[in-house]
Image 1 (cartoon, rainbow, N blue to C red):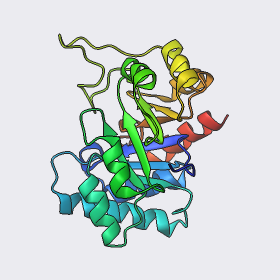
Image 2 (cartoon, rainbow, N blue to C red; image 1 turned 30 degrees about the vertical axis):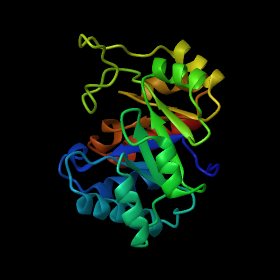
Image 3 (cartoon, rainbow, N blue to C red; image 1 turned 45 degrees about the vertical axis):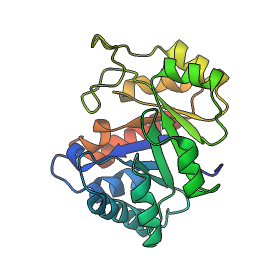
Length: 228
């Protein structure tokens, strides 16, 4: 398992989130402002398109000489990660959900030094920690803290009702989890003091940065609040 990554400020981004701006531009601004982790999540694109987005993100991170400090992963697409690495792109790993490719398969193909993240609703992760082997997982992505339009299916019951997570539940997940936890789902600047008090290792956002009028300023505010 990989131990060298910083979950504190985590950006999830795809071209559908940026209001017509390039993914690379927004990644560059977020990383310049202090974001430490980037996940490429491109819905409905073919493998080549996602590879090129990953390449562009890796290039802007490298341009700031932060390739060793900022972790870059791709959502779900193990095939993209393997192909990108074959082409010499510096991509650190993959992030999957509980209905995606199993984490142990990702670990098998990516090796011990790759980063493998798993996301699910907080209650499901509490159950996962109790009953499943977490040896091949490096971190959990938990939530949703609030209902969010960037992932409207997150946190919904079978009847369609939205179930968000309390800070107490997140504190409990942090207490029992054998791996670091990053929390998202509609996270805003005002949430960060209470979220950090739960002990989790970081926050993740999509629209709060990718959809902001000024991504750098929005990212900088979030980083400063978390560090404070």
